[in-house]
Every structure is written in C-alpha cells, then in structure tokens.
Image (cartoon, rainbow, N blue to C red; front, side, top):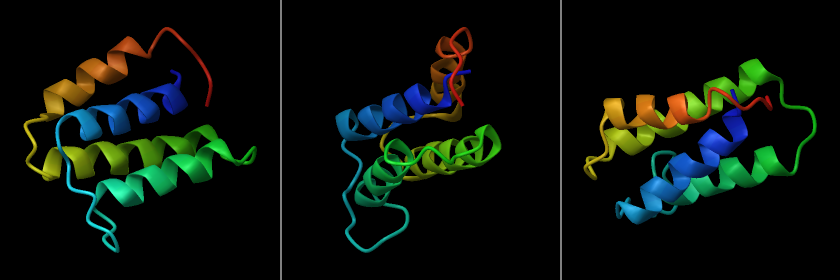
Length: 86
C-alpha cells in the first residue's frame, strides 16, 4: 500500500471538506499538514510508523465531523492498495 499517497489524499480530503486548521491543536488540519511535511522530509519512516501516522490522520479527519466517514477512509485506502511505498 502506498501509505504516503494515502496520507496526502487524506489531508487533501480534509482541506476539501473544510476541516478547521485549529492552530496549536493536535487534532487540527495544521497539525496534519505538519505531519505530512515531517514524513516527506524524512527517509527513516518505517512502514509501521507511517501506518500509525496515517491512521491518526484519518481518525482526526473523521472525528472532526466534516462529513467524512470511516467508510470514506476505507475506500481511500483501498485505492492505494495496488501501489507500494511505505
């Protein structure tokens, strides 16, 4: 599974859905963007760690109540199953 691409798409979906930036909060869009920046700037993320971060980001988007469901996230992940990178 291309977890990095799934993370990128998760954040794009959060932006499109109007997730609040919530500066200073670990549950806001700003934090998710910083997470993506960290992942993209690092070569040392294991697939397991990237998977945990992806899960956190997807949970935050669903919990934000912006109209994105767990089923939406499952579909997003399914789209990235056939590609592989971390």
